[in-house]
Length: 595
Ligand code: F6R
Image (cartoon, rainbow, N blue to C red; front, side, top):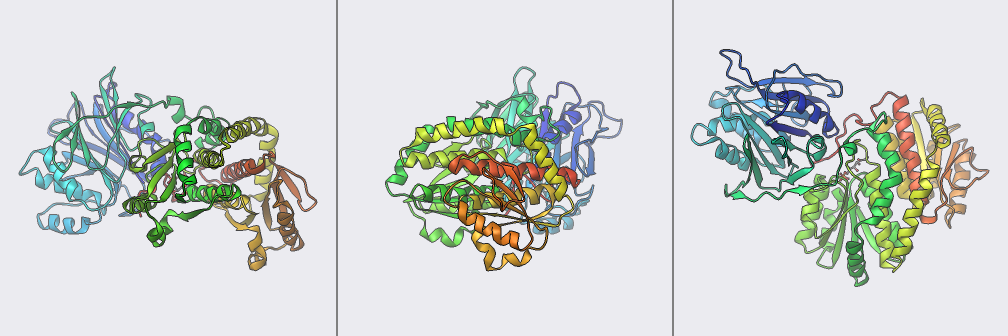
């Protein structure tokens, strides 16, 4: 929802610039405003305060005029409490201006605190829930040391939260986590210490990280980092790990946008997904063969992956269920210790997915996390983890994580029917075929198609069976990236009402595969064509029903990968043409950590 970043011992003495650069890497987490607080190296006589700069708007081209310093915190915001204004942007100061707070999450009980604090003459300058945290610490620090004042304040907050606090006097940063992600990094050569909501923020300096758990806090001073248990206040051992992520993973690598880079990366990431997790997949296959009931859950794109998982299973003769994680609770009563809950998530931090998973875990279900980001809450609560290895996904809309998850579920299906090696070969072949297929001729065709759709208001997408989840994902990519209304239907649904929407030249995409659904989908296509629809086939075959064809590789049950990638690319080019920012669509955030 929001991005947190901080540095201690900045070796350039330009901590504000370092924080700004880190925040730019986190912009996908929130992009309506940003801000930085720094303790300047040279203090203006008579000014014993942190210096703060805050602005509304995107951070992309932003510059900061803050003075030199080696310690600073910063934040990129996705508004929850309080409108998008400079005042509401973080960091928020206490009355003395010596303490500043950045925050990701929602303080559900902030109003009761605010009333009390106002009675005690605290001056508020924003409408946010975050500002109360600064004043609560200020109040508590009158009676105890700063570290325990921060811990106590944080423990009193209700909701899912992560905070970072900078103190002018002691020059330390304290951070605490309960439900919202935080990670620290250490650059051992230069003794620089970093705090972030996510690793890409400081990947330029280090890949040696410790992911904070809920209930943990860190105190970062010039001489090092200490980890604490928030409830007991006792020091804990840091669990450092070195990630295999490289700096290039968080750069655009010559592409104009992360989204385009990540779409093209699928040529490699899909194969990578097939190289990992073999042991875990075979273990799960065994459980499913033993009679465990499989339930797939996820939100948004991940929920379409969950639905595709159900179709993969059905095609292999295995029963399963699927739910949007936000709709799972009514069905929780059917969950028990014979349930395998396969939770799909790019970030592993989506609140709805976590709530459903925690509830299922309480009922004894085995939780399987099919995740991309590492060190997430979901990963840590899961009994079995299938990391999909797509690397940092920076664009807000999900592409490469989705196809890596899809490949993982496909492999799981083949493992259950003892065809794992065959499945692996098919995934590898898919990646090879994609390399040839994603060529300039295809891209030019998609750009032309996007141009022809630029002024449309509605487009429709139909598909059958496995192509049904593919249509949902195809339409979502177009909606998110270009703000064009795209609606997906199961082909069979058309004649039950939807067909009223089709008029002369209404653009209709038909997603198809060369399989047993071909004739039926072509019959539905004929119904659209008879109403004057402009029919654009996305399929590995030609048909007189199609006015245009975007040809995709013919790969049996893996044909949907190409069909979906067409939607990703069309969304991207439509977004560019319609003036949207493909990496940061309006109103969206990369990790939806609130209910
Ligand atoms: C769509 C998209 C969202 C996410 C959804 C779940 O492009 O990115 O629909 O798929 O918010 O997020 P994760 O996968 O992080 O749980």
